Length: 78
Length: 358
Ligand SMILES: [Zn+2]
Image (cartoon, rainbow over all chains, first blue to last red; front, top):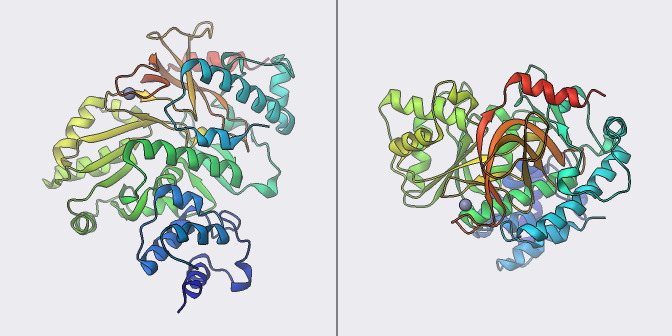
C-alpha cells in the first residue's frame, strides 16, 4: 500500500467517511471528527507510519490536507 | 477584529503587567461589543446595567456575568446551526445546570490555550495518559459534562489512554497495572478531578493496601476541593497522601471554569495558581464589589479572551480567593498568581445576583 492509500484508509475507517469526502475535510467539520475521533486517527497514523507526533502538531493537523504537511515533517511523504 | 494569531504566537507566561492590561482592555471591550450585538439576553442585561456602548473599557470596568446566569439563560452568540458541541456544568450551587454552546472556532481556541499551558509544564511530547475516571463520562459525544470536557481536553496530551475506573466507578487495578508496566520508567501523565481521584483512586488503593511506584509521573487535577473540605482534606494533605500511594512528586492542581474551558490556571511548584496570556483574574470585595488589593481576600472574577460563541469573557464566580502577586512568582512565570480559598457564603451569592436584577 502507498502512503496515500494508508492515509486515506485511516480517515475512512476512523472517521467513517467516504473517499470522495476527503478533499477539504476539516477537523471538527463533521460530527465524527471531534477530539475523540482525532486522537484515534492520530494514534493509528502513528502506528502505521511508526512516528511520534508532538502535541502542537496534533493541533496543527487541522484538515485532510494540513495532515499531509504535518506528516511530511516526520518524513512521511504522501 | 481581534487577531487570534497574535494571542497564540505568544507564550503563555511571558506577558508583563503593563502590556497585559492594555491587551485585556482592548480584547475584552471588543468581546463585550461583539456579544452585545449577538446575544439578546446579554444585550438586555448590559442595557439594564447602563453599560455605555462603543467606549473603551479597562479590564475592571468590563461588565461581569454572575456564573449562575448560565443556568437561568441560554447565553449563546452564534446561530443554532453552527453549535458544534454543548457542554453542561453543574459546578455551581443549586440543581439547575448551565449550558455552554461551542462552535468549532471557540473549541479550537480553547484547545490551543490548553495545549500551550500544558506544554509549558511538561513539554510538547505526548505522554501515556492515565485518566482517573470512567469512560462512561464520554458516552454522548455531542452533549457532555464539564468532567467529560476536561478528559477530552487533556486527551490531546496523550499518546495512549487508559481509564482507571470502570463503568461503575470501581478501580480497575488490573488494567492500570498492565498500562503502567507497559510504560515503566517513562514519564506518564495522570489526570482526573480532585474529588474523584481522592474518593475512587486514593481511597480504593488504601482499602486494598496497594500502591504504585511512579517517580516520573505527573498528576494534574482540578475541579475544586469543595467536596473534599467536607471531609476536611486540605490541598497539602491531598498532595502528601497521593505521593504516599503513587510515588508521584509532581502534582499540579488547576483552577478553571467549565464556562471558560481551556484557559485554566495551573499550579506551579511553589503552590501558586497562575493566570496565563489566555486568562486573567480580579478579586472583588463582597460588600461593594470594589477591586481588592493583592493579599486581600475577595470574590474571584475570571476573564478569557477566547469566549466567542457565548458571552463568557468576564464571569463573576462563586469562589473566594487571594491574589498573591503579579509577574514575580519565584517559578519565573509572568502574570498574576493566586490561591483559591473555597466557595463564598450563600448570602453573598444572593447579594451578587441582586446587583443584576435591575
Ligand atoms: Zn509560580
